[in-house]
Length: 261
Length: 233
Ligand SMILES: Nc1ncnc2c1ncn2[C@@H]1O[C@H](COP(=O)(O)OP(=O)(O)OP(=O)(O)O)[C@@H](O)[C@H]1O
Ligand SMILES: Nc1nc2c(ncn2[C@@H]2O[C@H](COP(=O)(O)OP(=O)(O)O)[C@@H](O)[C@H]2O)c(=O)[nH]1
Ligand SMILES: [Mg+2]
Ligand SMILES: [Mg+2]
Ligand SMILES: [Zn+2]
Ligand SMILES: [Zn+2]
Image (tube, rainbow over all chains, first blue to last red; front, side):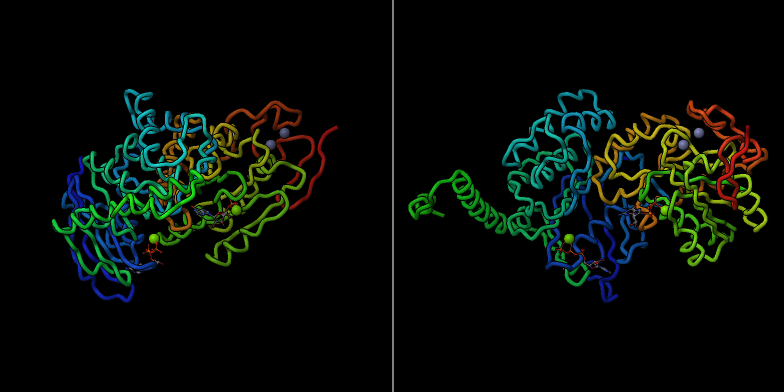
């Protein structure tokens, strides 16, 4: 089945009252953020999407694919699962070297040029991390940020999943605006759960959550794009200083003035 | 009556899966019973009896490997369950020696593997996996989609005709396909025979006698209720 669009139909919040946003649609190429305070139900919402909830989860939400509900006993061929979720807690547990793991995964996914795709995946991941990942590294030796970077790269390049859900990737210390920039080159649905204003404003739209319920859907306007670009500069300043500090340099005011935000 | 034998390394989730399955059997007004075969300690019989009020039993294998124990007592266990009026008998074994396998012809063999156990596990457990009908992969909630796919590949590489079911057993996700297979299992027939060829060894089971029941074997044996005894010269 080719996925062209998914629809989220609202259910109820934690207190049982109906969600204010009762419907929103995601089309291929859309990037949406989910924002709200800790514990407001962001992860729960993307879990509903991942499970193709059919009014059978605590929130009562329903997910439609191409306008149709997904039957309860419907199961995808696991090697063609259309959704990849990069969760808040996922770590690799497998005792294989990165290269071997990715090679098997690429084969499972029926990739024709396995070696090329594996290299592309590692390259993608390495644009997001500090220390480079190489093929010989054991998966379990990767740091949190390296793990998250490789998971994203694997989902996009090898998995080639049409829908990718990312839960608070900014917390893993990866290069988040770079990630967004790379991801935008792929025609997929991206859903970011985020506490980060830059990611939220660089998305096409954002869902505001509170008390387990979707309260509001805001479509980014052109002025917000300008603000987002300014915020990106601030982020880059922070990244610049992070780089200097990591390199062991001493910091002075002059360096800040030079960057002139 | 249908016989369903669950094997798998300790803490892989056998009991959790069985409880989810039993819950669904009872909801369909079916009559399951449950037996746990373990080396030294088990309390699943009590917890399952308390939770579902169905007939349960535990058997300590002591010096015998649990799968050997299974071979010599299973005929009596099946009779016990039939007398209790069950139409499905669930056997959970600890399956520790990894050379034997507990599955019987005309039963459903289910091996439970946890997704968190590392990519080499499917290559290490031999006939417990290769002779099973279904492989249930538990704890998929704890690993990434990519690792799930690779783990599944490793299972199929060792047992290419096996049915793979992925489950988050805590939340009952992926249990329905197991129930479907159980309902399709043929009734058990006497005499029962062990599936596959036992490993080379010195006891009657190890040298290839596949008939189930202590009366068919020599050497150090036991019955369902009796502790070890010796038959032979
Ligand atoms: N619509 C709902 N109905 C019932 N319970 C809900 C609903 N939405 C969320 N919850 C419950 O609220 C709790 C917190 O939700 P969740 O983990 O999704 O928050 P979060 O926004 O991801 O938080 P954080 O920012 O800390 O990751 C969970 O126990 C979840 O089951
Ligand atoms: N997260 C998670 N935990 C599980 C799952 N299945 C079982 N467990 C946990 O694993 C532990 C061992 O499970 P148990 O069924 O007793 O294993 P057994 O020794 O094979 O019978 C328990 O704490 C279960 O709650 C699963 O799918 N996901
Ligand atoms: Mg969360
Ligand atoms: Mg158990
Ligand atoms: Zn043995
Ligand atoms: Zn033996």
